[in-house]
Each structure stands twice: as C-alpha cells, then as structure tokens.
Amino acid sequence: MAQVSRKKLDKTIESEMFIQFWESISRLKSTSDVSDFFTDILTQTEQTMLTKRFMIAILLGRGKRPIEIARILHVSFSTIGGVASWEKNAKPRTKKIIEMLIEEGNWGSLLDRFEEIMDKLPPGRSTDWHLAGKEKYQRQKARSARNSLR
Image (cartoon, rainbow, N blue to C red; front, side, top):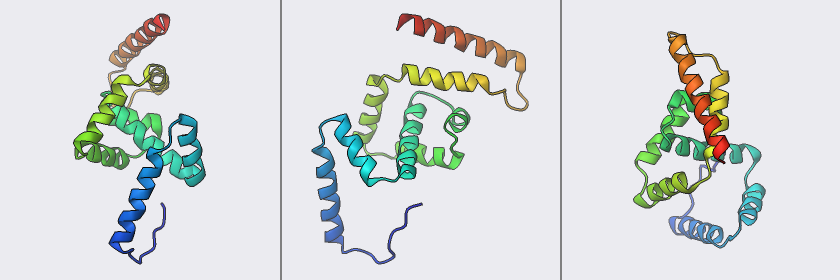
C-alpha cells in the first residue's frame, strides 16, 4: 500500500495539484503516451492494482459473478466489493464512461480467455458436477462459434 505523509497539505495547494495532474493527463493523446506516462510514475504493483480494479469494474458490468472474478484475477472479495461500491456510487459521468467502455471495447477475446481459465478450474464444493459439465460444454461451444465468426 502506498504511504502518504500524515501532515496534511493546504487545501488550496492540494486542489491545484489535482487540477494540474488531471489537466496533464487530459493532454495525452495516444495510447503509447498514456502508457509511457503511467509506466514512469506508477510502480509495477500500482499498475497491476489499477488494471485489476479496472477489469473488475468491466467484468461486473459484463455480468460476471464475484466468485468468477476472484478466481480469474486472484483478488479478494473485499476488493471486488470495494470496486462494486465505488461503481454503484460513482458520478453519472463515470458510470456512463464505464458503460461506454463495456459496449465499445473489444473484450470478446479477453473474456473468452477468462472463460477458458474458469473451465480449467474444477467446480466448487456442493456443486452438481453433471450440471457444471453441461454448462462448461455450452460455454466451449459458444466460444468456438464466436471464434469462427471473428
């Protein structure tokens, strides 16, 4: 976890810092510029944490269950709950952006890989293995059909 000084900044200075930071990010035009910028200022751990939270938001928006997300991304349920909470209480503009990313993004192949990982994992305790096998077969069939159409 990142450490922040206990000494509080003056509110006007803090506000100005945030304004400058957000304006700087908004000036980045290409994916490579954004990637270079965040790769330089964030540690590998911070980058991983940020991308996992982003993917949790996308997967929740796509209707994935928390148990599936936890298994795929190796995150805790409290992390998933935290992302679900901020997504639920987000500003309307943020919700609109997430929905737009879910609809417009090319998530098909990535989500197919997530499903393949899920299919390799055995069903949990107290699961009807016969029914789980049928569902796995249906998912494989649907993935195969989607891949043939790409």
